[in-house]
Amino acid sequence: MFSLRLYTSISIQFNGRSNFLILDLTLNYNDQKTHLFSKNNIEYLVEYAIKDVRDICRSREILYSFLFTKKKQYNLALHRTNKINKNMNISDCIKFSNENPICYLATIENDQPRVRALGFWFADETGFYFQTSSIKEIPNQLKNNANTEVCFYKHEGMIGTMLRISGKAEFVYDAKLKAKALTDRPFLKNFGLTVDSPGLILFRIAHGQAHFWKMENNLKPKEYIAF
Image (cartoon, rainbow, N blue to C red; front, side, top):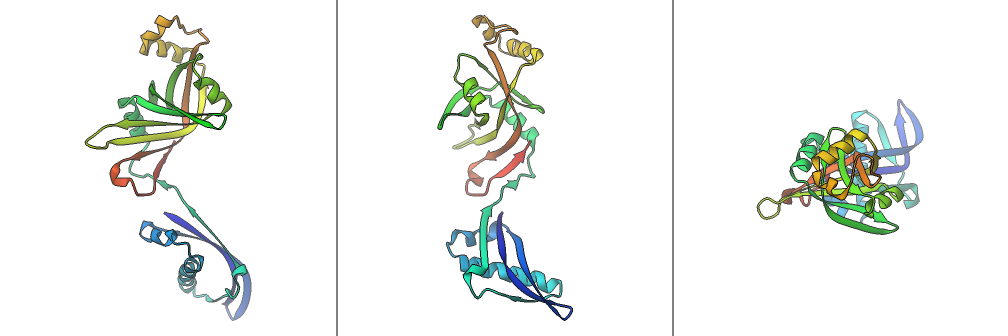
């Protein structure tokens, strides 16, 4: 979906009286009209918006006359809005990530993106959990910039399905979760790690947004799942 914001002067006649006001109107257009926004033609977009405004005025029995004699009389702002995925929810994301634990985690170091493959720990209704070590670069990168994104992938047929999750990383210090990490990942004990080891680092993405990608929706606007 796209939103078109029209900000302009407008003169209306209502109940026999003339009124001058500023119109600040946002119009939403569905995917069938998105071809309009691929054209670098402001005049065309304004005319299209005026038509919709006229329809609104007619529905309210308002007589209208638009003052568009000079370009300075309007300012048009256009932006693409995120669509909310109503067909899938966070439970689908939890299931997908747990079933496809090999993922790709992105962080920022100064102005340089860093990405690596890693084995995902687990997800539940409280967030998406990761385990790493203090000797890795990940902890310091996330301390300096908590913004992160992770991509999960399931290969099916020729292409497959991707799940991308973005948000802010939160470090987790709960002793019970550290004990769970050692139970779920017994190889950590071979490195001498214990519940009290400062080298055992846990973090999660508790809030953010996610979206699924498949080839059939490749050219469609992203539909996000907020959590």
